[in-house]
Length: 444
Image (tube, rainbow, N blue to C red; front, side, top):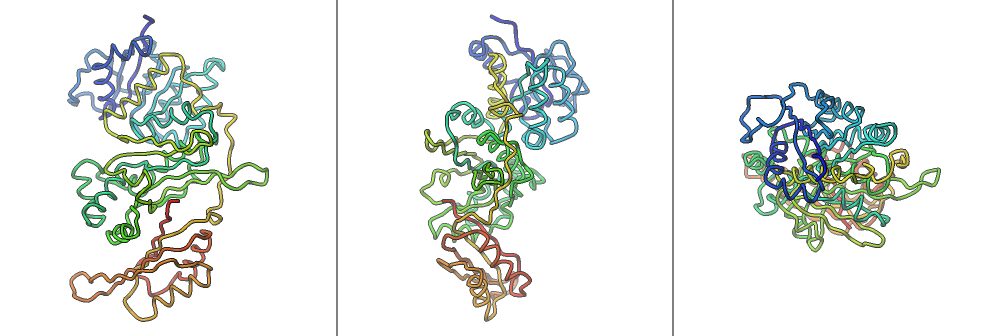
């Protein structure tokens, strides 16, 4: 058998420890499939004395993670530290610049610096290149990057969309099952370890946006444009919204969606990217995805609809994705990071969301007084928004018997998004509203 692929591991948290356990448990099987053993040479973490439940004595220790890239006994560095910048980015640049392969689970770094790192990887070793792989950065153990880059490689994709954040999916599906409001379910998710102590990165949609930007780049041969992702989170969704969606035959899920529509002045397609809560029809495959699960749908011209579903996080699934990348490197078949050479990736301009046609769910929280419905209806009429259905529901004021606030929800007929935006502009500054309106599109 060929010489081992020698690995340095930066980061010994949940995933790093999982990688060590996986290589220990399935080492012989992995070696057969990779054509050579995978062997860890050196490791690095912040706290050398911490008990991680694994034996680190066989591995050399580096206190400075960037030194891993310069070791003579290392062929590939695995970065599991996280963070878009700082030590993780310094390690990535030094590793690729030194002509060594890099495997990472760092979605933020890939979304912000992936084009730069891919360019460094392709130029390394006198232009022969080195591997730069990041399967674990999107959807944990689900092989969605491999699925798009390899399995669907012969297809022109029309759309990529899915549930990309397990924390949000757990919260929304639990609200659906229990009827409880957002704050109570978030607290439960934190107690169970499904949400961080500071959950903003997840519930505001940033985590899902990082993943969507990566998938869009691979699926549409496009340069990553994280700054062009339209992002909205789930913190404003109430139990009443969940109940109303159910009455209409929908569930609410945080969806990342990317497609190409329209053309720029040079005739190139424009890229649309959005992370937002959507109303998903109950008969759609994504409606059945609950708990901390991820699922991605890709629609191709010859393969049709592909569904990738599974655990989106955790030590086992994410470690599995990391080791799958290492196996590709051991086989000598990593391929370009983004399917095609980075110089050939199209710098696609953002699409105009106002041109998109869809149906919308709009919820207003308003003061309980005469004339409010007429005010809303007049703005919709003047903006050219056609209302399909309208529901009014009171909510008791906290500490009092009267309903001081009323929830007014409506579903629009299909129309351009700019019409809804214009209607809300006409209502801007109204003293009738107790909070800004909430808009969610219906997934079609």
